[in-house]
Image 1 (tube, one colour):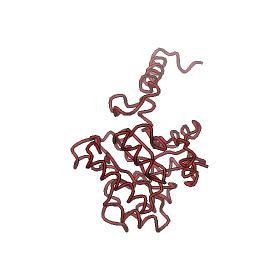
Image 2 (cartoon, rainbow, N blue to C red):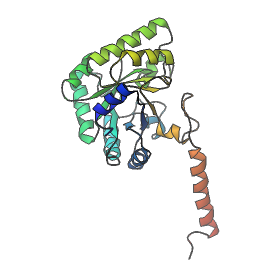
Image 3 (cartoon, rainbow, N blue to C red):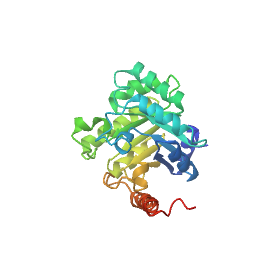
Image 4 (cartoon, rainbow, N blue to C red):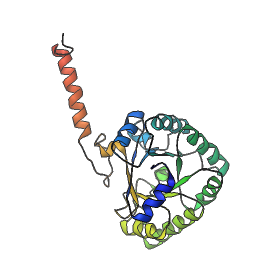
Length: 259
């Protein structure tokens, strides 16, 4: 089953690509499982696509915990990954453990935290205490106000070298999966080749061991907010607003409900 991390390790060894999409509720989780994906991520991206925030920073641990619980009810086979939101883990390993434990109790199989070298101690602490960790490097949205926006990372040789060094250090610290966001595809390919743990990319090219996209971006539900590296597989916003409009028209015309 995909929720078993050993399956992910085996997939990397065999060169089989893994698939992940964000999910924020029971219905989306059921759709992801029915579609045959491998994992769902309760991402702090919910702050932007569900709550309408400008970035992910306002999302609270209690909100991730709530969404994790209802997503977990919708799947039986998929890996459930949950984000540690901003402010829930940066103060130190003990704070991170308390937050991560809440998410595992809510139904997550693995937690994701943002940050490179400064997070090595925390990843070590969690990994030694039965908390599986996915490390997240490259563009880290929780740092968006520090880096001045949603900007591509690792573009210079020096920056690329730092990211590779961070990736290796996080793997040595016990991270089970590494997510890379918005970095050059050749750098993501090099990191993937150097690591023994699976890598997941978002805006990082095709060479990673798996891919993740935001649910709303895949289905075209947020057409004015999707990043350039995403791909829209249907015009969900148009289809759904058309259906809602048809419902409203039939009610007003007396066509629905029928006798």
